[in-house]
Image (cartoon, rainbow, N blue to C red; front, side, top):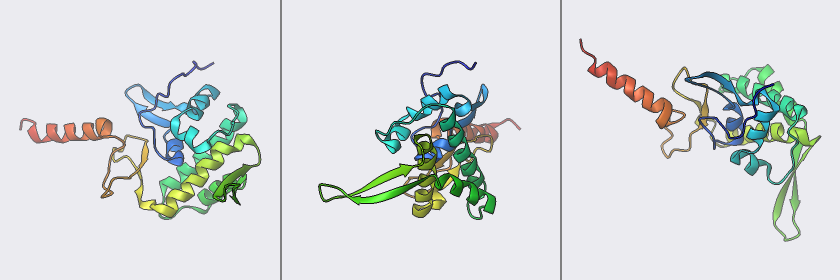
Length: 191
């Protein structure tokens, strides 16, 4: 049985929900990690700020069904991010298969303001469906801003919200700093 995970151990959090889901796998000095390799990890992910914000106050069961549906959504996003300009039909079908389990109803609230209500087949579909729906919104907004880290050994992705859209690294403190140090060493290496 895997150990209980209490705090979110991931090096990059706070990205939009779909990108945050992609970032549940990472590599560090200790090797490869997958937060979603257990229901305990699922609980950590469900408790993280971007997920809580995206799901609102809707209860989501942290059990095997939710985990399996979330892994299905992550696999679909993995396939889409691998070739964003020309996604395969299989990748498109995989994301649409997740999206078939929910919908957004537009309503006029009692205060006269528009409201959106997300409906899913089962509460265990809510995180997976929400991540898939978030991917669509990112694609509609700025698809060129969904990027992998420029460090080819890094698995992380980010949504570039910088003003000029030139972000290259998952974080300057991690991959960006390593790249700068490598360039410095290469320039100053004895001949």
